[in-house]
Image 1: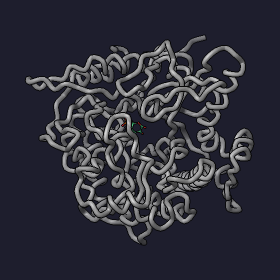
Image 2: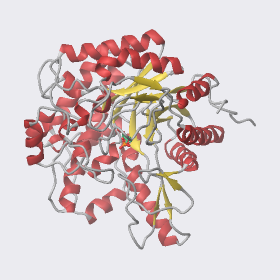
Image 3: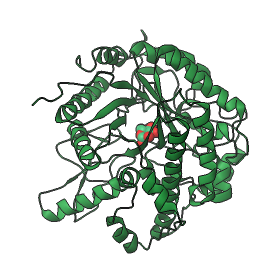
Length: 482
Ligand code: BG6
């Protein structure tokens, strides 16, 4: 018997970004205001403003026509630099580029009858450029933003009406890009909808926790249905194209071999995998019935929702992978990093933002997910946010980033040798961009340095970091030369 010795032929190497973190040009060519553009930048690294959005903070944001406090309005001006940026991706040898389409460019208020042609024209140009270099697009339909008007009208995804609006948007895209886009993703890190506004577009600050959970899981149900309808649309419109789910995979370990800790970790894991369970298997798993009952959550379903879910599972599963956590039955763990709640693992080091670095955990996650679903997997985010130093000679010596990525790619290769069906790897943030969680510019992920500081000062000039040349070598050798 034999097993794979390395990455398969045609493995999709590349990078991933999101519209609201790179494009800028937030108020041109007919674009509407999006939910990401009313989130204020954090006052410091440990503060999270994403989900603290209230009706009052939205009003303040709408009245503010600048981008100083709202860095996602300016991004890194990819809108006007896309040619230069894609040329740099091509120079590294990218096979695939994952990016998202801003819904508010296409339907500025979310519910117009006709799309905004100028918005579509921008993405036509991006696709032209990718085709010029033979880079496959992998498009996320919803990456942490939606037209703000839908928050005002329906409280975002909490309102069932949004399903139809979203699927009008997806139908426009599938028809227009038929034959040009082979890979699509529906909702970025769909599980993070349990944290609130940034994913659901629903304002729920100040409510008791169970009521918040009610709103969030109901909003997520609407997303599951919208995702299944999008899957159906795509399969009918463009039968050769494939569509996947996207999970923020948060592998949890038991703090000790105490069976109570192991069970606590299993429960945490179920709450994470619930989302892919629904999207890959097409049914709500039984274990959530108990969780919902214990939190007095009641999911309101329309008559044929269950049928739509069952008939339209996703074709492949994608996930982001940054860190792992530790669970014990005795406590909820320490607060860790910006996003994750979990205990510290004494065997792991953390990034400057407290994210615990765990390459082996990636191999574990890949094996578990392949085993559980038997559907192709795609790692669509992984990377290291770090403070970089641009030297006077224009170099950035980011060997720490190379070390991080190398270790993860090595473990990914082990998973492929274990037999996991892996389609590709798009590291997060091939070019420095605005941080999702804190809106900092100085939390950098890129192979390409962008001259802009946290206040928005800088020439926006692009520089190749040391990791740029390293990744080029990795791709050219299909992951052999690490
Ligand atoms: C993921 C998101 O959570 O992590 C990205 O899908 C985000 O949008 C990435 O940028 C890294 O997070 P941050 O907060 O460091 O930008």
